[in-house]
Image (cartoon, rainbow, N blue to C red; front, side, top):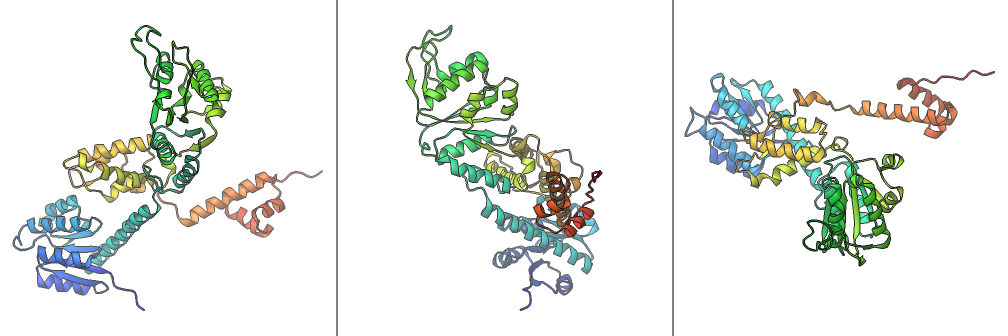
Amino acid sequence: MPDEKRKLLIVEDDLGLRTQMKWALGEFEVFVAEERQAALTLFDKERPPVVILDLGLPPDPNGASEGLATLEGLLRQDRLAKVVVASGNEERANALQAVGLGAYDFYPKPVDPDVLRMIVNRAIHLHDLEEENERLAKSEVSPLAGLVASSPQMLQVCRTAERVASANIALLITGESGTGKEVLARTIHDLSPRAGRSFVAINCAAIPDNLLESELFGHEKGAFTGAVKQTIGKVEQAHLGTLFLDEIGDMPLPLQAKLLRFLQNRTIERIGGRKEIEVDVRVLSATNCDLKVMMKEGGFREDLFYRLNEVAIHIPPLRERPGDAVLLAKYFLGKYTKDFQRAPKAFTVDALAAIGTYPWPGNVRELENRVKRSMLMADGKSITAADLDLGMDNPAEAAPMPTLRQIRLQAESEAVTRALALTDNNVSDAAQLLGVSRPTLYELMRTANVNIKRKDRS
């Protein structure tokens, strides 16, 4: 059975041009319309991925008002539709305005059939990629509410979180600033049997050392100057719920000892108090520090580390989560649309390229701030790479996608090098470790340009 023809809508009031374009695009199933309402009705019924649109439509054949109104109507029906507008040399300003409103591209008049076919085929290819990306985003999105992710690294984090959520154990979440450690902690709380109880968070780095103990454990009236009333601490507030200790690596050593005592005995004493108070909380903690290095340097107690680290989850930085930046950007765009009166509805192709290639040193927090800023600064109905202001001259080429061959060669080179290192450059043992023959290993070594230094025999 032959492949089904792809649909294409031509909106053109000139019969001669319609006929010429329909003939030039014979490999498609072509639908035609002469004015706005007919075009919108036909588009709603057939849903073609690409529309060729003349801006000079009746009742304004010499202007662009009807064509631009038709463009906006088409994109309201399907924001993924690729609308290619017609443009003569004297109408270039109108074509650029259409692109600013969301048109995919424009083609010059008079019509060049080869150029038009190339533009249409490229538009269909991009439409299919974006449609598939949205489908995958919906099917592979993080299984945990509150977490937006589709990369294998983050899906593994989600699976681990699901497994440990129901267990009443201490959990240490590590990762760079801005990766979403508190979001993950809240999600774990929401999945736990304590979901209906309090989730109490305290940032150990944001409170001065002399006040942190009072914030954690509370104080009695008159315990110190300024203590004019009894105050319940965060630990006590979290009774029967979850206590989240953010930036635990910044907790001073004297307070670490008191926290350890609480974790061992599950009782606290308010500052100035004499009564032990039993508290039932689950403790989740997070840090962007390397606690093992801090332990060696004497900056963090080893016994406290093992109390807090019954299970560890590491959240990778955004630059190591392929696809998540674009997915998160679209999520934030939808999330903040209601907050801004003139909010753009989409990202341009160059903006998505910039988002996907930028390293995001500030991680998800930086991405969220950039999206909010660009929603305010954008002049058109779509956010461009310039609106994001990431300092990338050519985002599409900043980090070119490696080919499958390059990826395979890199993986083979790393595997061969590692196998030889593990076997002290013994080719027979390395081949056995890799599950290949000696000739195959030699060929892999030659392809990957891996050499070994043979030992002198005496």
